[in-house]
Image (tube, rainbow, N blue to C red; front, side, top):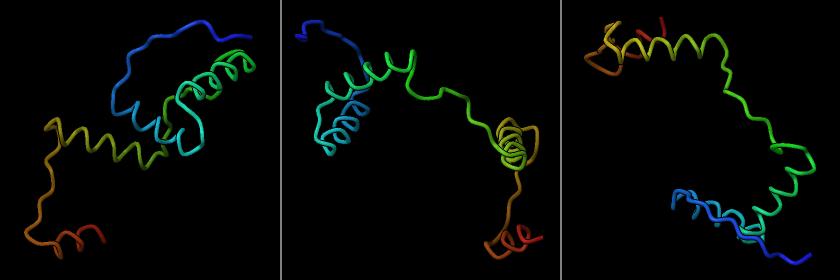
Length: 92
């Protein structure tokens, strides 16, 4: 079947260059990679990979909440006068 349809899209130039480099290292063009993606999407009946929000363990989620609270000024940020003081506090 002849390739006769075109797709025009906008993409971040850095992302395009990085993707081109990856596919070039695999011996294909970005156009060929996009065609593979489209064929695989048809075979899968949708996106050929899972689309999910990341899930973190409870310790990581607690650390992220704490970081957000520090940034928002809800919790004072710890400060240390030296690296050794900081490491001592971290080890406690």
